[in-house]
Length: 410
Image (cartoon, rainbow, N blue to C red):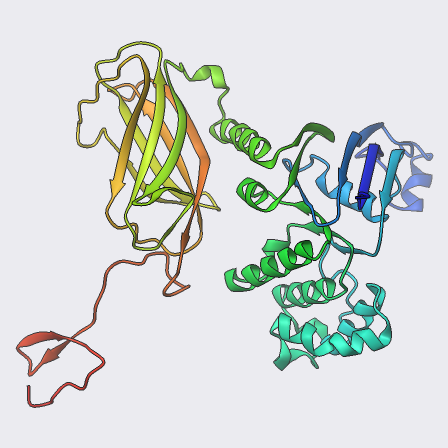
């Protein structure tokens, strides 16, 4: 099968100007036209290569400034490369700056029709898909209002709805799951996967390594414009999270003694290992470690945090002063939670192993192990504890509310 995208030895160079560069012609004249030339040049992309077949998704990971957005701009044709080549087969759709082509003085209806035509549809096709676009955006009540009255989130929803209805052969996506609330993000993801299953080749930029791990067929890790790693998404996402772990902690690996190393952390349900659980279900978090020698005692810590880094649960064996002997070689310890009453979303497990007095860190891994919780009874909540409502009966006793009628004489 012929690849939908072929990128070979791609390079893009930019100039870095002086901070003293004049901003107007008058300033330039007064300075004698000094500081007009660029101070230096730098490569935003250098020697980047990959290919994507129809129906495949490539996830692009990297820190801010790694060259991810520049890559999409070059592939889309917005920016010309200074080296290498890009070949794209078929109609292209791009979600680089959602809603960037909208005009604030036009209504939502007018912007939809114009943007759909710009995106490659004929006028007749745009009109035929108009109702579907508006329904997807969930903005029926506002579609005839000027765009300037829309919030940023509303504009993004409308822009995304237009882009995915152009039915592209190649789709370039820059952080598409930042659009709208969780329910709308889920709908966007479903639509993206539908396009993929229909043969659309997709390049996805994401800061969520677990998203790349689960959705993508390939992964590309960019670091300072160069390819750090390219290939299997499971392996690259794990390496990327480990790199983020060390940066978040502000410590190099050698600062941890590694006398006890954390080898793996995973969740277990009654039916075996699991990457996701239901809200309110029991779960066992297993920490597998390897020790270089025998230790009389150690402290294990574990916390759960959301995608924003907010810790929602934190515990350790130190608080109860457990005595945990460590034998040389591989060992396991588990935290059992009878009910994990968190709302449905993505979470991350952070684990550490410390000396008995907390003075020494043998190993620590921050947000390296992702897992998901399903089903949110109330999307505005972050907890899902066991609960019931009761009513005071005749002022002297509490009785539970039920769906059946309560006799006032009780």
